[in-house]
Image 1 (cartoon, rainbow, N blue to C red):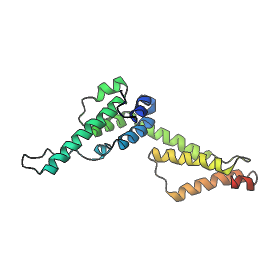
Image 2 (image 1 turned 45 degrees about the horizontal axis):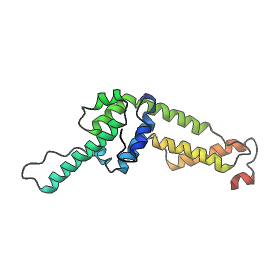
Image 3 (image 1 turned 90 degrees about the horizontal axis):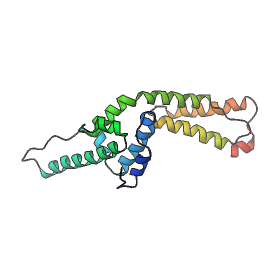
Image 4 (image 1 turned 60 degrees about the vertical axis):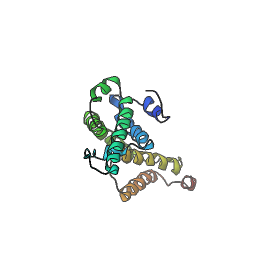
Length: 180
């Protein structure tokens, strides 16, 4: 894909292939947001305006059509050739994304389960700074957020505190660790 936008390089380097759906989707959403065409994924296609429709209505339809085509180019350009061929005739980006989700969405659940296991099974290692442990735990929480897992703030705090308590069961956390 020729990079007419520097952000397209992200998609070029992360083309959709079977095992990378989650990373591909995250990168695609970043690019579509940056080039201001993400909205066509979440907004239904406007009805074809009537001949006597106001200019604003005709302009909205044209903008949606243009932005949908731009988003479609980014999406198709970031897919393997086989997937491109499978989706090129779809009219809207929403159709493409729904189909791709149906093909690869099961990976999302598996990925969430792996991250949840890492989150709840990780405990702070004695002698390591608390800051490093918290960064690791925040990484798990961020990944879960990206994967669409819903966890309220209170539950997140409980899990973080539990991971610290598990470490203190084998001995107290030193003052140096608390200060980072």
